[in-house]
Length: 498
Image (cartoon, rainbow, N blue to C red; front, side, top):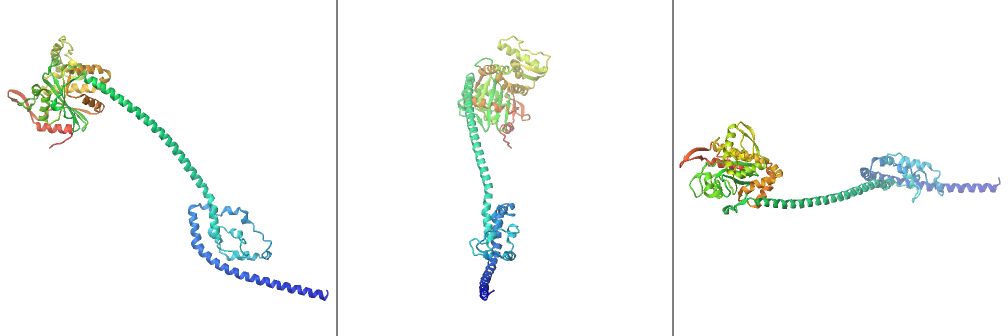
């Protein structure tokens, strides 16, 4: 080699050494700055990760499933995290793998703490993006978490869509239900309207029917009682008076008196026989038997007498004669009663007078005198049975009257269906009352409820509250009215008196 060539080689070698020295100096300066930044950023990151990232991660974990954070499968599948970007123009970094190892050795393993992964490819994604080569920021995990949060949102859209769909389905069902309910309400209104119309029509027909029946009765107005109520303190009191009149228009005497009390308080129908031989004070008259009040002043004076002596507010009455009583029993097709052989004989004896009044043969409706026990009685036989006062005195007679009426009342609902004409034409033409047509209508509407009431039979005076005496030549019953008044108040009104 010539000398000139040797000098050229030396010059090239020196230039190469100077070039290498400059590059090494640049590298060392860059390395020193990088480490200072690393130390600073690492300290900041540790502090932030302790107070901020963990809180954000905890908050995120409350709303998402654990599976969403284990391994972050979305990022492993993306190619941008698996391949290292190529940097062809910066060859000075091609031969420095030790820097990558150095960074991985020095930096704390935040990835395992946040996502339970060994490596976080997110650092490689922005290794050189928009920064000076070799300057990596360790606040990237926080940004990665925030990115992850942003990328997790699409996963939460599915439950929202499902929730929205459920709400739409719910609204659709509610809408259908409203339509169905609307149709049901519409149908319900139509049904109620039809029922209301039917009730009005039924009420009109019923009112006309009651009016027709009422027209067959004889109405007798009592001025002193016209303004008095039908029902008082929950009780309707009507005095039933059995007259012994034989001919039409004859008031006769009160052969039987039964206080009919319908009590809504005790839900009972009381039939209380008032013995005609009780010695009572008659308003405006001397003391006398109870039935004398009817003879002196008719129903009006009799009602006043009952009020004064027994303390019962009774303002309505109904008078029936012999014929009405017999027709009522026949209208229900007779009654079955228990009779002794002696009572059978007395039935035939009382039939003699009634047959004579009717113009019938003497032995009409006679019973077999050998009979006893349960016997079926028609109207005439029941009347004769009820008038018997020779067995058991007046107490026995009133008891028989109540037995017949009780048996009739039990068969009355069926008779209204099977024999309405017989019932109406047989009873009401022989009945006199001060009940108005409106009051009769009110009583008829109570008929269904009355079928559920208990029937109680009793008589006044009570046993042990009277004695038989003779006053002014009359055999009468002297009564302890205080005890009897207290009993009636308790039975009818539910009041207990001391």
